[in-house]
Structure formats: C-alpha cells, structure tokens
Figure 1 (cartoon, helix red, strand yellow):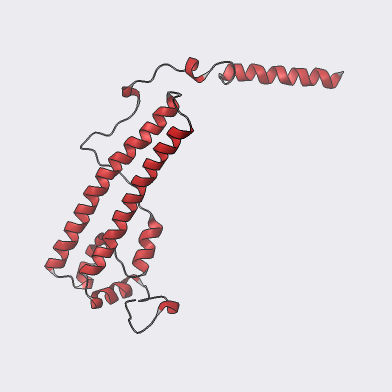
Figure 2: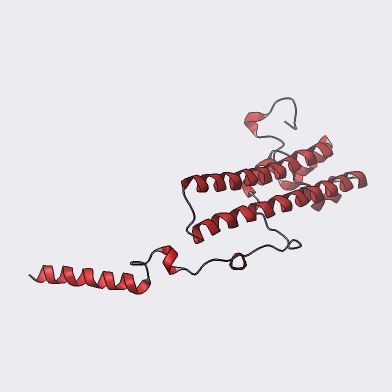
Length: 185
C-alpha cells in the first residue's frame, strides 16, 4: 500500500512539474508567439563575418611546407620575401578573406533558416537534409578556399624560402617516411 501511495505521489509531482515548466500539455505552436523576421538576428552588410578556421587543416598544410599567406607575411623579413612576393601574398590574403566573408554570410543565412524552421515548428526530415546539405557545401567551399591559399602561397615562394620557412617554424622539410631525393617533397 505504501509503495502504491509513493508511486502515485511521485507521478503526480512529475506531472505537476511538467505543467509548471510548460513541457507537458501544450504544443510548441500554442506555446509560442509568432516569430517575425525582426526576432531572428541578421548580419548587417558592413559587419565583419567570423568564419572559424579549421586549425588542423592549416597546421597540416604548414607542417608539409604549404604556408598560409598571413604566416608567410608575418615572417616576410626572415624568409627574404621580395616586394613583389609580399604584394602577391597580400593580394592573395585579401581576395581569400573577401570570398570567405561572402561565403560566411551565406552560411550564416542558411544557419538562420535552419534555426527559424525549428523555431516556427516548420521542419521535417527532407527540409533538414536540404538545409544541412547547403550548410555543409558552404563550409566545404570555405575550407577549400583556405587550403588553396596555402597552395598558392607555396607556389609564390622559392625552394630556399620554403626551407627557411621549415627551419623558422621548426618543421622537417618532409616526414622521414616520405623523404626521397627532393628535400621539398
């Protein structure tokens, strides 16, 4: 008898807590006021867009002697970069950042669409698949842009500058298991 009374009491308390917290008894549509465009944050056209850098990609590229343009520019004196090389790397960095910013805005828009679909209770599996596929594609394009900038930076440097880069950064010119006649492999 005592067990039954305790179980009933526990169930009643759980049910009461659920109603108090609003998690039971109301559908999401009933519990929310309509969402307007002003409720969803936007990014002003002139605002900077932060797009996270995949540090692992950058570290791996640089470890294998594919420096980022900003890294090469930071140590330009030590590398002995010519003014032409510096200008080329500045332009590469500027162009890459501009394109990443544009893609970052599109990525933020898609993220807001996904959030809005959930907030408005207007979501199903196919919409989730479509929105997350667009988000992933944009993220992949941003990642590829960054990595292509590493490739272009390597092409702008001479073999001696790449060896100096490896020495300055404390990298081997190539891992031991990948060495052959070419020290820049």
